Image (cartoon, rainbow, N blue to C red):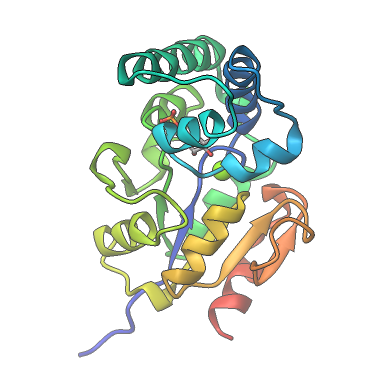
Amino acid sequence: MSSEPRNAVIFDLDGVLTDTAHFHFIAWQKIAHQVGVEFGEAENEALKGIDRMRSLEMILSRSDMTFTDAEVFALAEQKNTHYQSLIAEMTPDDVFPGVNTLIQGLKAEGFGLGVASVSKNAEFVLTRIGLLDEFEFVADAAKIKNTKPDPEIFLTVASALSVPPEQCIGIEDSQAGVTAIKAANMPAIGVGSADTLTQADTIVARTGDITPALITQWLNK
Ligand code: BG6
Ligand code: MG
């Protein structure tokens, strides 16, 4: 007897399940100002979904200062130490409204659930906010060679869930992430603004606005 392969939903973490995108912003802004680089919401948007070292390279490329490899490494460490101090006291109350309901609804309908975050702090954050055990697979950022917008992390999660990419849907708040989802041949739900997430198939203002019905609709297109 043959059965249809199931569908899967692959979530980004930072800015999708909880507001850690704001903590990354605060920590990157401090580094940027230290090296004489303007860093507001627009500059931050371009860094969302990009891994730590590549994000730092992007900031330093706009600085008039020069840096040794050791100095670059120290700046990355400094950013991460600051970020970790900001996430240290997170609790389940920090999960975005409606996310737990969405997860339970998707589970009830048999969807596979995974997380595709290039953050090396993803497991810590998921543990703090009480969501780690809700997902069948959480990508290990240390094993991902190519940061978003490369599709590698979404394809890795799809493969780990044993669901073909075309039966998966991705949820992202970043331009780089939406591009990665599309490059993985999946429909993309963007969380945020249509002006920013131009490649997304559909946009919601908040993750909690997503329903299993919306996901099914896009998977069946
Ligand atoms: C992504 C964030 O999820 O993780 C980026 O959108 C962040 O802003 C990146 O730089 C890497 O995170 P970390 O925790 O490994 O420095
Ligand atoms: Mg994100």
